[in-house]
Length: 389
Image (cartoon, rainbow, N blue to C red; front, side):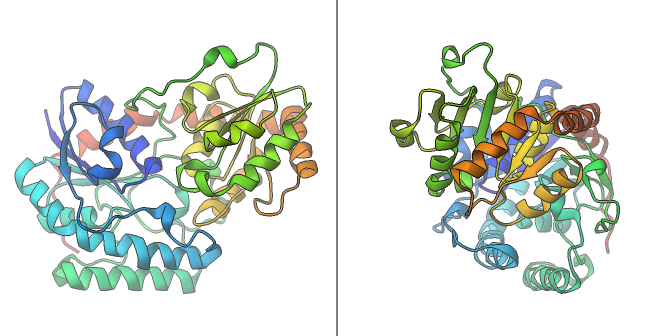
């Protein structure tokens, strides 16, 4: 049995796929440890998890960064204000975690840059987890060069010259993508790496979340509306519009939003701060979301059409993938009106072509194997030797 160290950034959307994979590995008898920012993630890990805290005096919370930033500017903010400072702060703590735990394999989220650099320096086998397919794509010559320059500066500070590469966040052994190639555009150009598309996970490993299941009404189509954990608390206008649109329609809606909004919700809308998303998707008829990669792939795996209201970062790219694949429709996040939202709701529930394409993509996504396929790839890498660039 192997000793496997996981490290992910303090973001729930990046933790959840890792939790599912770790759960499979632990059931197989492997020894699992976590190098994470405990203040943000400890309460989301299994109760008896072996944790190496990465917390420093600085707190890294992506949700607090420049909430109005959009487009390419959000990429700059992400690297300069979040990913690079976090990498430098976590670097010594991750070194200590590797020395203390002595893993046979490291499993590193691609946005946890310190984990990738420590893995490269240690010479141990490691695997990258990619929680958004946008990260593997070449976007534009200017943007790609800028990202590579940020990576180069970080490596010059932390790695010897022979270990520096253009994209150090991608493992030379295996890069596990929680998506499918069928969602990528035909002309998409990927960064060179040993990719394995494993599809979405099915939610194992997450802590249970209470939900009032008796509220759901048999016979009424259910629409789940979520903007993810990063945007949820600052997008109350969007939620208010959705509630107005749902009023008097023959549907029921679960809104993942601050529960204070329940006071303005019509009778057919339930507001919850957290929900058991995978379980709800098995009961839903459609999903409206911010085009967060996990929610998109989990919804498609359930065969559900999507209303996509991208806000920032990779979300416009993911939204375009789904729309081009014929399984979703676009909603203007900042400009949507109740009338527009009502029209989108009705189309999501009535458009047979959207549903058929979502179901076809769901068949493909489920066939990839999810967390079991990812676990197989990780175990297969435990005896690999890391090549030196």
